Image (cartoon, rainbow, N blue to C red; front, side, top):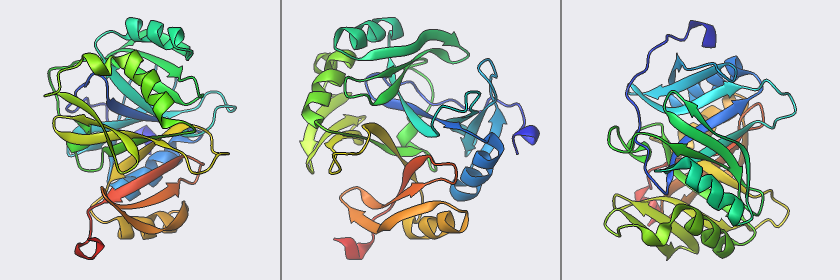
Length: 267
């Protein structure tokens, strides 16, 4: 599928400082990944820069909403990585190191700005993206895009102190950015919408990770479609304060969830 993907840029999403603004999948088989996610989420694909190997952008309504790359190192796990926006990737990388995290790659320049790959002090990987902060739609407002991103970690409050220090949460204007505690989560809000959260994991054996939720019009139908496409479906579709959710694992092992509107009967 990637061989026939056209080389078109499409509209870009905005780099929003201090909150997740982009996601990218490292897949073992890029063609299989684009086939699966294209069918499930209605994405089309355009070729992106191949400086670090095969890479495509997932498009929804003419806007790039995610990146997918083919692993050149078979030892890397298949996983989604969430990228936080920032005004200064180098400064954030230094703050990560100073607070007990690690920076594995970068910051490096690429076509949409500067990026780095890091891990917090619990070991949860995340990305850093310094890009265009003025133009483009906010990622969570687009259909088929990541609408919610959640850190599942052994200690959500400690994680909030780490990320708050790294991205300067306390220094930001409340009209543009807010941190609050709701539904047993530390919630990040941007443009008056809840976009991400940090939650203490219920499974103490689970590896700390940022978990991506993609927007779908019908979570129940998406769960059935994912099962037909060979994904693992974990449990039933469940009602949450943010919508109907089901946890999935793609055929190559990448974990993610889909989030659809609430049913009237969920109230």
